Length: 168
Length: 395
Image (cartoon, rainbow over all chains, first blue to last red):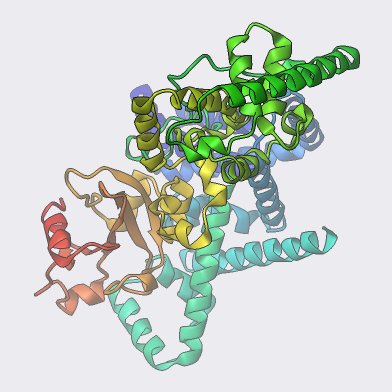
């Protein structure tokens, strides 16, 4: 059984951490949540592991987010300060990239939880059936969910872009 | 048939429909302009959303520490500053710190500079009267008297004041060390150019291997002793020939020259695509892909050109590739050949309809089918025979 989870770890850990990092914006937290997810898989080995692992991880994000929103924000602020204060000048393109990343994150935050999760799972290569299973949706609803999520993400990003341009 | 709804369009774009469903929709889209427009729009939204999600990933390590993929080797100029090689007399450099000293020593330095420059000028005029005229170098005849002072300064290189003197004496008309020493860093090239025009003696120095930007300032100072060397050349015809040969040698391309290259000339330089990002742009890559993603998109392993090192793999729009289905992305493997010409090997998984239509039959490189994958090979500036040779090496 442990060997099975070890295999799952090899197969999905990287993908899970990437999805969690995209979801939370915090690499350390993403890794912690991924570890916790696999710990749960050891306790209750899943039948259909990939959707199960990602569903559990997304549940953990939601629980964790509700419990420690403030703490998370504070940690992120401290982390940002530490990074800004390390005295190493960042190249301009890196700053641009950070801005870009923040803009995408802001756009992603405007989506509903379900739309956001559907997008993130699709980005990890999930097919509609797996997305439906992980999110508890009907398979026929996944296309509509993704269509809405993608459109909202892009529109929100573009609207923010217009606002930023107007402000600058 | 009813118009397509968003969910169906995205299911089509995501490859979630059966062959029959996809065929029916394709047929509808062929005759329904509204749905065709919506399909195109949703495809853009889908690719834009995917690109945005990928933006969320952690930043790449700093460029200096980032490992260079084997395929990118040789794309960029070496990072280490290229010190110009100079085999003439000892080079007299003005240390940077001289200009950071307190004001009084600087004024003293100025006074010493002026006195020595005047003396050197006198010495030069006497020397010119007493010495036989330079044999065959008219450009040396036109050199300012200060060049001799620079020569003298090179002989007294231990003296700080003499070292400073070399600059104003060399710069002739300006006679000011601060003009050279305090000019903005962006100026060296312009100064170097104007010096070359004003003082033909500097041409030999300009013909030396161009300096990297970081050393341009010091190099301009090196021009003084280099000109002193040219004075010595007047005494030796054989050395003069060497200098002439140096002058005739075309300067090697260097980053410092890039800003003064004309637009037309710059357009001809193939190195516009030499950086990975420029090449990525030129290749119209929407998003780079990893092996997992390419495997997923193609349903089989990535086809590669044997013996050619790929630069990167990315996603391009199907519309950009002849013969590819416009409804699906295309995986593009980007290569550079030994002449740094970009080569693209485009690949797209055949959809059911195209398989059934027998599109795989009678296809020949550079647009052909291998297994279930449509392949298209293109190369900027490559002849048909070169493409055919490359196509033979596709595995």
